[in-house]
Image (cartoon, rainbow, N blue to C red):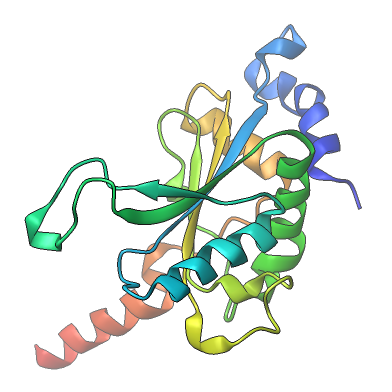
Length: 197
């Protein structure tokens, strides 16, 4: 199996015909991966620590606690209160994490139908939401009552959406081929509207 690092290094050869690259420096490259989880809903400090500990196990790097930048009375949040954990991965740890995400974690997701390509932004980065952290085998055998979700942002040097989509396809990201109307929950809502009419 070809690793994400090897695919990243071969991006120029794969994409040069489609985008007319003349120099390997023009092809997209992976910059970093940012993994973040909110803990605002957990008032218990032990549960907050569990999130940080499990993110550390999943990423292989110590999770940094992030505090609120401003006070918001409506959310009962004061400036400096812990609101989440974040891990920034570079180099070998980044490639290792993406290998596990693409080849192990995502296929373990219940009713997996691919990830949405619509989450690629205009700057060529991709943000993916994970609903249950237990899809990663590092934490699958632990207590199931403290399941939490987190976000993964993959930062690249791609210049636009089209270039980023081709680059992520080359890396092996399992994008969904289904149209929006074919996906489960939205189809159910549509059926309910039809019954009412």
